[in-house]
Image 1 (tube, one colour):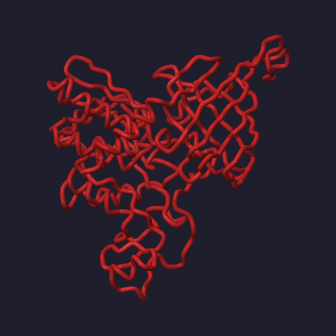
Image 2 (tube, one colour; image 1 turned 120 degrees about the vertical axis):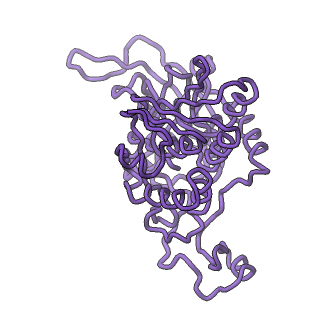
Image 3 (cartoon, helix red, strand yellow; image 1 turned 135 degrees about the vertical axis):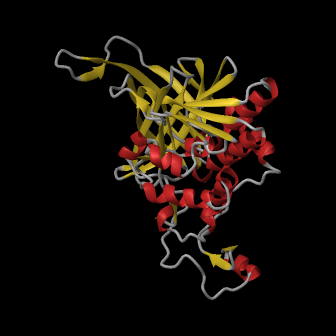
Length: 376
């Protein structure tokens, strides 16, 4: 996932969807597609690659895939004290002390984050008990208060970890500061019950938001499945709007869909724009580059980095002809041209490790034609 969630990165190592380390990334003795398939490899550029799963979505299927995911997302609610709230993000994380789950619920400007530190390095299907801490703000995008607001215990029911199908329920108590400044549970109040169910669709939903101002649409939040649906709605219901102003976007939680969001944006001739106080990074930069015309005001922060991982190797460690690069190369070729596009993509991998971010200088923004118009 091309997301610069620095809070999450500082907490743990990114959850790998593809695991297992191999000395060689190709089956050197296999020279054709049929034998490669029999071996369970992936045939690409006349090589049989080990341990790669193609998670790209064909253009002919993207609308049906998003529609199916949106049905799940729209039916997903976080229930707290019998009140339903939208569940907008879910992420499992591996850290040294064990796996934890992060869930975000609520609406823009009033998000809440639940963190479940399981203490388990390996999670199996079935039920177990976990602590739970609630913070104000959105940990996925890095905007979360440092002090917890609620804390308690939870029952976690893992139905299918491979598909991230997990149920959560438990009790939360309010927290206050005692006379020594220590955070403790507030006495005299009954704990409140919560419950929700998360899955892979929620994990890639994002929490983006479009706001119409005059003849422009302002986009903020983490990009994902809902961003594609929101852009389609913008195209259908606000056909006169042709400029998308990107304000604060930390990245994408669903790269496969995000590239189609960029394709859709470009096909409909949108201009993308960042203001002097805008801060976009990672998958947000990908989407920005899809604009036919790309306006950058001096002072805007545009951050790029590498990504992680295939077979425990980060993107910069993977050969340039590896199939994991294919969709990004195709995407940036469409956005920036046959020469500049691929070169820019590989520049982003070299600019910063996956767990950090490099903010481009004005000279770099101009050099790589990220801006077609730079406003001093």
